[in-house]
Length: 242
Image (cartoon, rainbow, N blue to C red; front, side):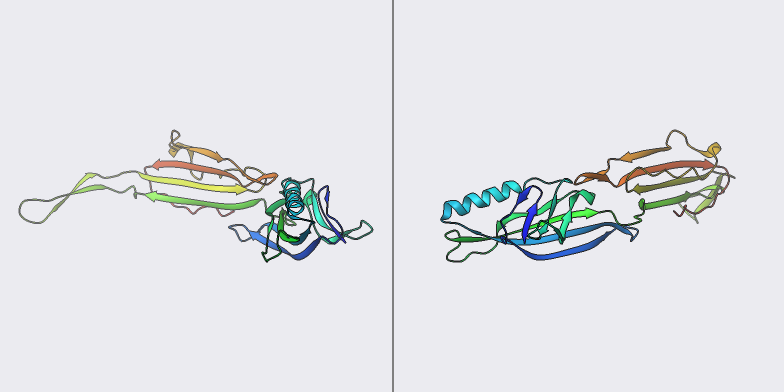
């Protein structure tokens, strides 16, 4: 059995399998965001002298400096058949990512004289089956004032403070704000909850954040919104649940 990383083929038996894991990375909504597969391997460089061992290590580091979706990393049978111990970058969202490049793992008296043990780790993120498009979301409504009378208190030199009514009716201010994060594109901002008659058009708006580049793919597209209202009567309401 031999190991292959993209177009780089290791000699038969050079690479040893150390472990493989597949873990779900969850979104803030506790839904699977990606499935992260990790493949850990080790190998032993054997050379005639220190120069040969060092040159082989340089060659390995150059080979594993290339990442992307075009690569497959895994073990092959002697007849060339692929095994289940592999990570297929073509099927992943990120392509292959070398999270730990080939580096020496152990030191003893003969290291770098006759042999050198090296380890490396490869990861890739995969989109879960039926992955939700809405990754994160939140909205809030805040109410300021009751539209009731406006009063003030006057403190006097002597006697009790006195309360004065300046207006029988006032306004209530409402702020509707929120955000939504999509997996592969910008979600739709929530619609305005109250009538445009009460909307402060100058302060209302939406904004868009740059998506996150994860290896070979963009994800986590965030849109934000905020609407301010003012009316002569008290309002009520609850945020929209999505």
